[in-house]
Length: 320
Image (tube, rainbow, N blue to C red; front, side, top):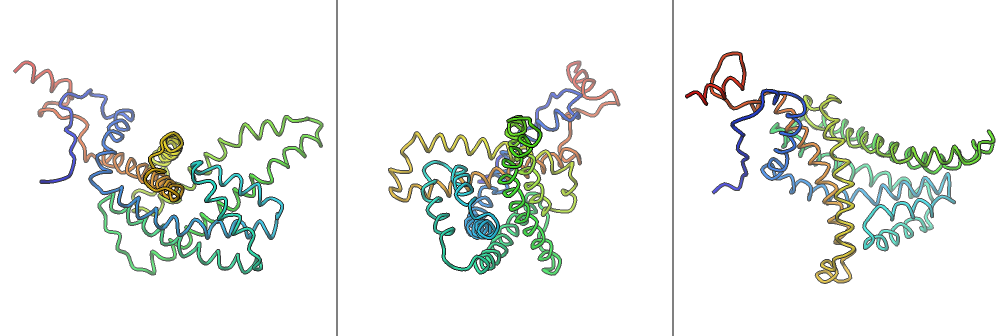
């Protein structure tokens, strides 16, 4: 007995079903089914493992760079980072970050080891992400190592550089906006404008980072117009899943009853798994859109008819 799920195609569909709105809705409808059939939840679990391995070396690099350039900004960065995870896991993450930030080892040495660990674990994460994208497209991911390794390493370096630049931009921009307001005698107007634009700017950066991840997929899926819909959907899903899971974990004692003192760790892992699943769901949505565009799913299920289209087909069936 197969464990695959199928969604029957509707027999009566409007002639405008070939339009973009219908294709997007049909792809969105097919995405959960394809997630199940392609074992995407298993890929998300594998990504969660490598995300944990990559996360703390990346944070070590970030804190080491801050220690060399802006040591007074460490508490602010730690506070912002801890607010990104569910409340039950904030104490755990804060303790780890404070321990990393308080190490007495030379900052350059910490930066070296952190960068090496981030590069290795980040490459492992991206390698699994790449194989997951190829599996979604039902394309072999086996390529010579001299072709895939440089691309993966360069992508990891781009992601790390983007995260560092974004963090420093957020730290510097607030003070810069206040300085501009004082210099131009504009009061708090520049600061208020930046506060309003900060979240849209972060959303754009987040989508760009997701698209960099999606670039590791098969070559036909790499054009921007094919990656962008899933990238936008992935960000929406990550935010929605994070909010929903945070509310659930805050009001339900399920994890505390089952795992006791380990509840914070388990909640953090589940949160990471949901985030990775959301990223893969966006990629799966792109796959379904590509199938529709290539005609793998016909826009109308009708009997053969003349060029008058689907409506004519339905008329012919009703006459019979």
